[in-house]
Image (tube, rainbow, N blue to C red; front, side, top):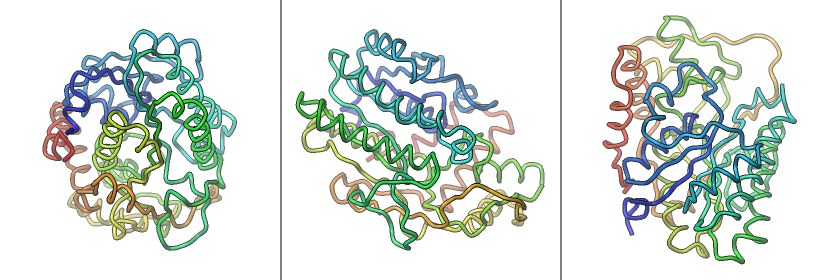
Length: 353
């Protein structure tokens, strides 16, 4: 069954649809012919991908909190999704230091709320929970983490993602599996692409600085991360979701979706490549002062997704940055950003194959 066949006419709920990755996923699902609904808080940034693409007019949009059990159950009862993609999260390391309890409430308790509501929904067949590459206990090694490696986390955000994986594992064994429902998790790297306006993230900060011809301020220039264009992990999520709908017993596992090894690059290299894509000389300066602890090096091994799903990343880092810069320049020039975003999805291949 192709990805398009898997989702055409299918009722799909995406939590976190007002965010960066959730917005791209909803647009892609709509192109596949799915009946898409989204559940999330109002956009956290101004502007936002949600607003500039007019996503509200393309899908059914519910603005509410995953910590609100009543609203979640009511929403799922009304929509009756056949599959849920759970992306709603507090997704920033720095914010987790400022509000650790809130981070755990959203990422851990919120996930349990979504799964409880899903289990109570008639017609549900599967759920896919998106966590993070930061769910692994960091061992400071130079090779990529695999799905069998220990979960953990130093900062509250990373720890919450490790906890999220444990919650999903418990629900899978205790409730979803015994009733024949699919439940998997997806762990992606540092995702970049057009429409991410989040302050404190490297590429959005870099794009803002380039537009103003200012140097980029870097907390950790030598930190290494697995960078990937948003369409690559989303293609993996869609492929995994399709398998869950078809054969939940086989595919209810954790999967990494990361870039090729050479695209795990230091922050300063990403800034240089981003500036080159913009057509400017790179310029950055160290951000002085104390900063919260962040992992110095993080890599992800996606061999399992390659071998079992036949998934592979299509965009190397230079191409991912070129697409991101192109999106941003068209946004600044006043283009129709729904058309621009859908065109990038179309060039990737709507079916993801």
